[in-house]
Image (cartoon, rainbow, N blue to C red):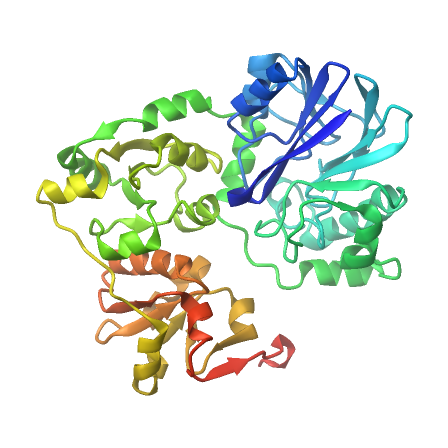
Length: 471
């Protein structure tokens, strides 16, 4: 028996590949399924099952395509009602895989169909649980994503999560390995650990949700307190995972169309396509196409695309860094349901400039330069980190306008004088800068290195303020 976690950092997502005696099972596959098929062929095993822990909201699963290509059945737990052929398992049902078994543990709470899969080894001993979003390391799945598909409230679902953890998960042996669907950085939880696997016994010690003395009322309050609204693309991803989607091969074919600078400009103007620049923040700051939006590949790319581009069906045309494959960008967009890439700028930004097209830039300064002008500009410093980051420590006098909520704060940015913008390290502030410039705010100044660099200066800071003391 082998168990391999296939972790994708930009989505903070774990898929799983289990083999025993010539047979394989895949749990929560990503949309591009060739790696699973290639791995199975290399290992001379047959993919026998495709297990889905629930209808995912934060990414588009590869279950449908993988089933079409391999003939393996898609397995869901109780209460699932997909629009395609699938086996809806009963609680406690067992699936044989080679010399091992996989047992269904229905664990509703995150969603009503949420299911944990218990792997029993060759001797029948409990070996590992694949928990989906039921149990993370350090946290549990948010209970507010299924409200639009049933009449249960967030508090009702949180209560179900409490029951599932205590009745199905906590009675298992401490040495059982926990394999969650997500790690730190996912929007499906609040306080996930940076590790991607752990033992259940250690989680019973470290995870607040598994405290043996916690009442259901305490659990519900802890789980629901401070939940931010889910990203807009979550609902659409659930729909795709439940109803079906275009094969990724077609998505790639449509997106891998090279465009000349003139064609690119025409599509942007006449079709209204989003010009998405996926280069580095430094490259974008130095030279960019006016009104293009920066979301760099070398960050939490897919998640920020989902946060900042509201309409998943809006056409997208790409500015890709030299030496990076356009296919990589289109694949990563499709993972979160953005299937409408319709081409890329052939030759990149250099071809645009050589064609005599207009370019723009973002004024960017060092943190030491901000230090020298701080006294006269302290009220014009904007921090686009999360509220929790800002509360932990921030520049005195600065305003918190979290990137994910940027549209709600546009009125606070001045158009008649310069202002400074920063995040933690420079990635999010450049996203914000590109969006603000596309909205007509051309008097912004980005602070390179973000708060990490600012912390090394003598700029006055305000340290932690407990949220409970705020009025």
